[in-house]
Length: 387
Ligand SMILES: Cc1cc2nc3c(=O)[nH]c(=O)nc-3n(C[C@H](O)[C@H](O)[C@H](O)COP(=O)(O)OP(=O)(O)OC[C@H]3O[C@@H](n4cnc5c(N)ncnc54)[C@H](O)[C@@H]3O)c2cc1C
Ligand SMILES: NC(=O)c1ccc[n+]([C@@H]2O[C@H](COP(=O)([O-])OP(=O)(O)OC[C@H]3O[C@@H](n4cnc5c(N)ncnc54)[C@H](OP(=O)(O)O)[C@@H]3O)[C@@H](O)[C@H]2O)c1
Image 1 (cartoon, rainbow, N blue to C red):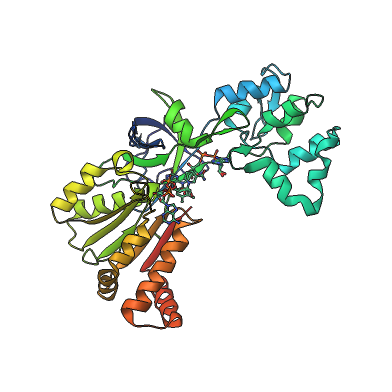
Image 2 (image 1 turned 135 degrees about the horizontal axis):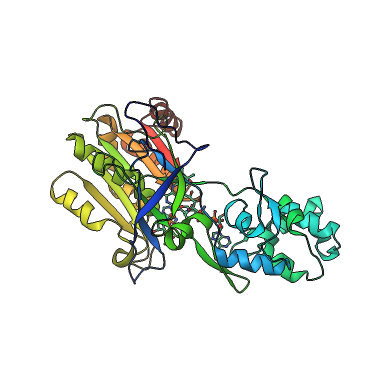
């Protein structure tokens, strides 16, 4: 492994990822949880890499070896055949499937190739007006198909290894919000990752990178990582005295643990307020001891929303409404407002609640409320990192 001379720029990047060790893999969720969310630590020792609170880490994962073997068998191959890797250089089919290509979901290009080879039963899915059915066929929740499913359902159709890899997309890195401050943990990156596993068509399916971290990145094995600055859109305020409000349900809490560690390490006196939500307090209250210690020290104001601890769902935006007056006062005192986590439902609901708070507490019209938040965005005081 190369090291970096002091003062010289770090050579590692997305194009030249640092081969990193995975030093800690800890389950954060307890027996009462339906999730497997984990705390991971990755060593930056010898890399010369650094990051700021709010930044993200990119990881080049490897596919699950059992899935690779299922796929090789479904294709009637041995795995030893030579195929072009993602850089065009020849390598063994098994190795290319492990490291170079995305194999967990089939796509339209593959359905087209199946039809061209004679899988006439799939031809209807390619009609332009049936795009919704094709999407459903390939990626319906708990009923998605990967290459193994499609090949097994159409046993007469075969592809040679080289033909097959030419139909595949490259395996791309996954991004994760960093949940640590380098000031508190020198040479280390912490991540907070929900492990993606689901059952589909009678088989266990695995998210590539999250299960790579949970199950397959062990001991002395190294995986390529890079750091991605997010300071342009998701940084702590320049002034340490500026108050911050952070809304981070689920793994969305990750960058806020980093913010809090950073502010504590720097001795910043700005007030900190976190809204955290998960399913159950008993199994899903990540970093509880650390957060509660900060509350006891007067460093953090914490509101939690455990959605499944009572009959009616309680989400972070409900806690925001209960605290609407204080949120408005903090905003008027110059607080930055941050949101991280689920893009599809949560971020929009939180945005709508914030609009409502500005309207009701600030005595503004709906139009003025929108303008208020737009102005906050422009001034980089309303910052979101949603995925
Ligand atoms: C800036 C940024 C920061 C992020 N930070 C974090 C973070 O801090 N923590 C974190 O956990 N994630 C984070 N993510 C998400 C992360 O990048 C990955 O997308 C996530 O870990 C899943 O990757 P994977 O490789 O494990 O799963 P993949 O192999 O990519 O599989 C995920 C796919 O599986 C599908 N899927 C899931 N469940 C089902 C089901 N039941 N039925 C059918 N299909 C299903 C999903 O729709 C999705 O398309 C972040 C993303 C971005 C862009
Ligand atoms: N790309 C991927 O494959 C992938 C993988 C993992 C995570 N993610 C993304 O990351 C997000 C975070 O996942 P996570 O497991 O950490 O947590 P999550 O699914 O966001 O759940 C965290 C909490 O938010 C609640 N919630 C659900 N809908 C909400 C809403 N509209 N407004 C506010 N809160 C809401 C959940 O409640 P209930 O569950 O009780 O409804 C739960 O209590 C996911 O939602 C997803 O978008 C993506």
